[in-house]
Length: 580
Image (cartoon, rainbow, N blue to C red; front, side, top):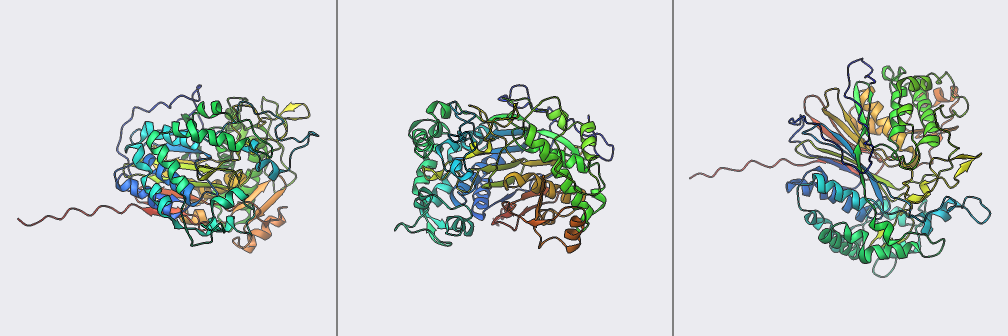
């Protein structure tokens, strides 16, 4: 067992069970949560936060609130997540101290083929053409994920979790700035005609920021799911409409009603490893959590903790650790039900030490993947942006950290039931072999594409909750999460300051960053070490977090780069005693 940097014993790493569909075992320990009584929600839109707080105020728990938060995000932030997408959820049970994970990643239809994103000449399709096709949509997983979490852990009735969102969809809400931006002419990923039609005024013109927008079709969809549960989504008229939408030209897909009916989210133990005396827990593959743990463990073998955000050497170390982790990720991480993923090797302390020793004084060429006992070809996956994240802590100390997505902005651009369908299958490698070697993340029927999403929960060495966080951002999610964790756990910054640290992306020989947020000494110092930072082309971070101190005080924080907020549930006023 590996140990924290200070040498103290850490809780045993959680491992996924052999059967990925099995529910995680629960530790027999029972205790009162240190932070009980303090409920927080941080999410990407204030209306989503309020929807969750309403559920908490009615006696719901973190999982109940997560259902309402996601339902509202699908209404007010549909470009990023929704019923037509998927998610990963990490859950901390305050009574047992157990951290478990739920995989609601989309699956490829049974009829999906390794060459489905190649043209007639065997060349990869242009990325946008592949995204806007019927072939890009996998079986949506979010409804199954939320239902499974609620069946096991929820407190309120399922049907009651949607009513506030149904009311908002029916009565209307002011169009947020980000939604209006992605619908507008200047959008970096222009919406399809279907999307423009769905999100339009009654006269058919595009909605603008601040317009009152109603989505009665989405309200009807939520009402069916509220009344009949997930079967209203995975079978019947709604399922038929989803299948039909993916079979339209161009490039119709192979999704069937059987694919939808057979989908199930999957419970597992979280994957946990030590960093700075803490345990950092993430979902196992196909989540990108392995890469995040690699970055942290490599950095734990450097002196980054004794430096700070104004030190160019610190950011050089961060960038080099990221490059090494990406090299391994792009070669080895995929759906473990279809290919062997060498998780233990990639996180083995001796292997991590070897990788850390590759960090020199200058950047050098693109790092090669490390040597493991499986042979894989070079990956050809292009990841898009279009994701969201939320964190919820209820009054009992239970915590949900969930990253949720439709993949690209507005997913595939095809709409059903008032929501957009995902394009998650473009997260597969478009080519299946490289030099005769199989590519780990190649397309196969029933397979789940690799993801960068990695909702995080952090515990101290005694198993107490410390923090939960996560971010959207496509392949940059790994570095957004790592940056925040370094700031919070190594540099001991307040959670808000850790989130607001500048973003730096280093992958291969590509370096980008928020140049205006770095002090000049950092930019110059990186240049001297062979890293020329350019303005970032990736999606901005959207970190949301809750962090608690040993004295029991907790704080939520939301990334200023987006529209999110963090709010605490107002404590109930004590009942006034009336004189006789």
